[in-house]
Amino acid sequence: MSDSQAPLHETWRKVVEELFVLTSTPDSGLQPLGPQQRAYLQLVKPVALVEGVAVLAVPHAKAKEIIETELGTAITQVLGMKMGRAFALAVTIDPSVSPEPVPVPAHVQASPAPRQEAPVEEPRAEYRFEEPHTAGNNPFYGEQSHVTTADSLRHQVAPEFQMSGPELTPTTATLAPQEAASAGWETTHAPAAPADSGFKRNPQAAPKHAGEQPVSLNPLHTFDNYVVSDSNKLPASAAIAVAEKPARAYNPLFIWGDSGLGKTHLMHAIGNYAHQLHPRLKIKYVSSEEFTNDYINSVRDDRQESFKRRYREVDILMVDDIQFLQGKEGTQEEFFHTFNALEQGGKQIVLSSDRPPKQLTTLEDRLRTRFQAGLIADIYPPDLETRIAILSKKSRADGIETDREVLELIASRFDSSIRELEGAFIRVSAYASVNKLELNRETAEIALRSISPDQSNIEITPETIIEVTADYFQIRAQDLKGTTKTRNIAHARQIAMYLCRELTELSLPKIGESFGGKDHTTVMYADRKIRKDIGEKRDTYNEIQQITNQIKGQGNS
Image (cartoon, rainbow, N blue to C red; front, side):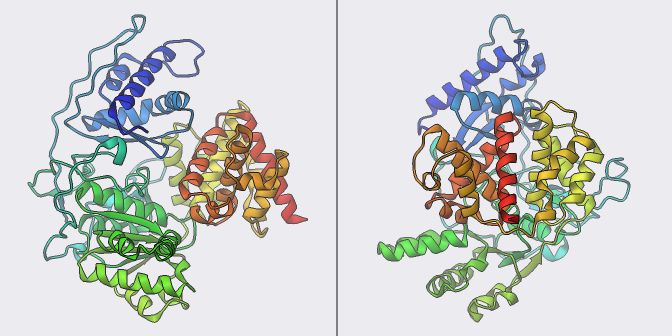
């Protein structure tokens, strides 16, 4: 993306013009836009295109709801056609938005813009504890559902989360606002509490300028779309408290649980929410592998002081999969000093692992004792009701109408990993879409045959996936690990990366290493693109099915 805003606004103008034309053209594949939808589209201001995410700003919550729920699919489809890559959507509220309306083609009936709601100041929160909200009499969940979202926990923070003492002081108190095109985006509001909550706020105005959006954070991982149940309520509640009161609630916060249960989502949600509430704080999220590689490179290039500034001059440091520091004595030593510097400076530390601190037996005792000094919160596999709720939320977010019996079927087959659960839903919905079948139980049964977890005892490695994928596309395995970007090799490489994400428990950086040292963001993009393609392109769906069957067949041989 260019550092200049002019190309960004020009791209958005073309996207809107194309939307107006396509949605008024029969057989375009896009649902027609009503006059009110076209009017809301005119309220959107493009903010940034970064790492496969289109960030848009709208003036109020109603516009955000319309864009996300009614126009999101059409926007991402047209934007993808214009840019030649898949995009996800992130919509933020900025009451100061004053976009330039895009002229509506003459043959498309225009309508006046909807009334702009008065901006509401949403300063930081003061908390009180109330009984958790449930789904009430919602027939989908039943009367006594214990499933909710993390966003609805914001007004439920227990008294022990309320901390006294001075506010966390930003490392850089006068951070200048950055150009959104080059550094991320700005937001001038704090997230609103649910309308029916008892969430109380101080009469303090929201900050005039927001700081730079941390580029390491995924804006799609928020508390709004994090489903909470008994299996993860403690870490979710603690995460919200940490985001709202960094270094005053739980420090460090140590989140542990098996792979695929949402630890990484929760850490990104902490960062995103903390950035909205405290935009001038410096927030850094890394995996332990990234920390290790960064440290090794700093030693090799004699840049240790620069390394120390990057990690010790932050206000919130989040390190994912801390267990991978085991056996790395030099890195452990450096992390110990980093931890001490942050703790003594009154800064927040958040860690995640696949096991509790006491089981990290090859870590130095002094590290384990520090990890145990804060709150240790575990996430365990969700129960059936929660898994159904997760799938229901995903189906609504993806705009896919799905019967409860289909969700129950998928949820009953995948009980240990949310990542596998959502992956199964994508496969089922894609199978129905590319084959033009009704998404019912029978269709789901057929689609699930090739990915049933009853073959989970098969050990599948990235090397196996690369070899089978290369053989399928009749190219060399080395080509997938190289830098060649011809269409057929790039497509095969993206499929192999997607399958590594689906069929192994490896982290993004580890998968990248298997492909010749590719960056984790490359793996993330490949995963998003193929997930999108299998729902839209029959050829891609068939390729995934056939390669998956060959990989599992090889594992059984």
